Amino acid sequence: MSVKHLGLPIALLVVAVLSIEIGLTALRQRQIDVTFAVHGAAQAAADSEAAEREVNEPVLVLAPDGALTVTVAWSYQIGPRFPTTTVHARVQDERGQTVAEDSMSITCKNALGCSGTQELALRYGVRAEGDQESDWALGRYVVQVTRAYSGQEPVEISSRRLTVINP
Image 1 (tube, rainbow, N blue to C red):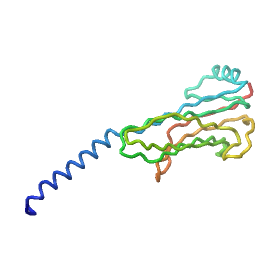
Image 2: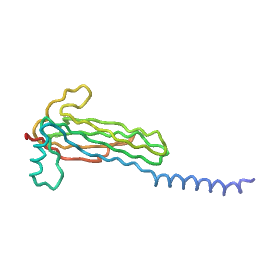
Image 3: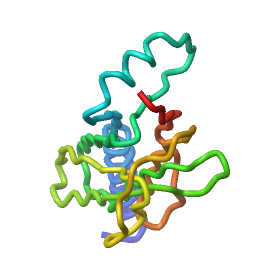
Image 4: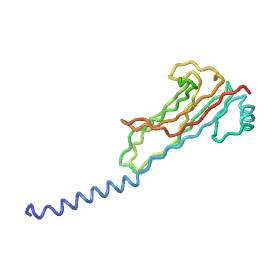
């Protein structure tokens, strides 16, 4: 076969490979859902007070001895590869100081996909392993959850206002 006759098969091969990659890219899905929950002994009273307030935007209301958890659910479908994803949850006070944070990594080794859930516990005063937890200080906070694919900048996927009240 001469060089003239190899041109067409090579061009068809390139088009086929590009078509497959574009098709897989269109089918590839990375979905991360985040839900917030508050828990604690005095939480029922805090919840009833929150119900009395009129707000346009959902606000989490927490008692000082309460706990805040962020549940991360992910579903990745049709690889061929998924980068490691880091999900980071952070609580900042009105001055912008970080008062609580936690993070997790999602590593999907199956090319067809993977899914799962994990809770991030946000405890006042705990920013790293070994930090001492304390009761939440009264006030207003912002809870921010970001995700970052390996080697990329973090992107905010959810945020919520948090108010800590004395029930």
